[in-house]
Structure formats: structure tokens, C-alpha cells
Image (tube, rainbow, N blue to C red; front, top):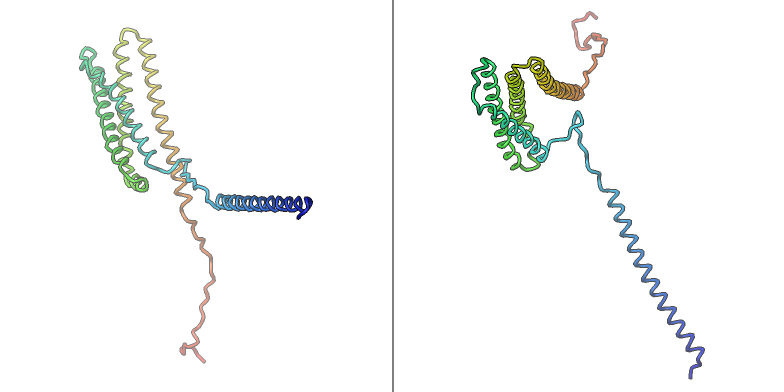
Length: 242
């Protein structure tokens, strides 16, 4: 019959074996977690960073969302200005003021047509651009630069005609008060000059950036090296005197 002390020793030994087994299992689990974490860190380190493309002048390359937003912007604003100009045509020509009434009518008429054309062409191109695949937008836009610039050119024409008609309308309505008439004329001309200056500034900046980009893309000219050319007699030539 076993003594109590031997029984206690066997019990303690079995507990120690269980604890050792649990420690081994925990150590293996920790090693697996560490290996996964290390592999994940390597994958994150090896993952290439996204390429950021910046065109000359700090502009971003064309994509479908940017192109559609630009077309939509022009079309909506052109429709708004065309609606304003249409209100000047409702009363017809004011023949009592002579040539001023005819010019107001013609300027408003030109503004309505230009802005309506801008809105319609914008709507057609928005539909076409929206149907394109994302990878085909850049090539499509590069081949149709003139067509894409048409809505903005028409919109600019319509806005200038509308502003001119507003200036002449104030000139007609303020006929009885000369100082106020001149003040309104100065305000209107300043407004139109701001539009002109903005267009000229943007055009000049784009031209300067494009010119610099084209100049940087040209390969450097090869320098002409001066070489001393010396004529050497042909050893097989028998015409020379021995």
C-alpha cells in the first residue's frame, strides 16, 4: 500500500506536466501569431505606393468623373445665363430709344442662342463621356479637344453678350439722370473687363506652362565636335612613285 507522501508527489508531478503542456501550447500559439504579424508587415512594406501623376501646371490627369463634372458645370451655368437673357426679349424692341433698343435686342438674342447651344452640346458630350469606360476617357478627350472646348467658347460668347445688353439696358433706363447713367456704365464696363482679364490670365498661364513642357520634352541638341581630317594614302594604290 502506497504512502500518502508518494501519492502527493505523483499528483504534483501530473499537475506540473499539465502546466508544462499548457505552456507549450501557449508558446506555439504566440509563435504562430508572431509569424503572421511578421508576414503581414513584410507584405505591407512590399506593397508599392500609389503613383501620383501631376501634369504641367499642377493639373491632374483627365478621368471620367472630372470630365463629366466640367461638362455639367458649363452646361448648367450656360442654361442659367440664357434664361436671364431671354427675359430681355419678352418686351420686343424698344423703338422709342432708337438704335440702343435694337442693339439690346440683338445682344440678348445672341446670348440666348450661344448659351442654349452651349447647354445642348454639353448635354450631348456628358452623355457620351458617361458611357465611356474609365480607361478610354483619356484617349477620347485627347482626340476631341476642340469639341470639348466648344461649350466653354459658346458660353463665354453668351455671357459677354448678356453683360453688354445689361449695360445698354441701364443706359436706356437712366436717360433722365446723367450722373447715375455714367456710374452704371462704369460699373458695367468694370465687370466686363474683369471677365476679359480673367480669360486672358488663364490663357496666358496655360500657354506658358504648355510652352515650358514642350521645351523640356525636346532632346538636347548634339554639339558639333571639330575633328581633324587627314588623308591617308591607300597602300594598294600603285599610282604613286616608288
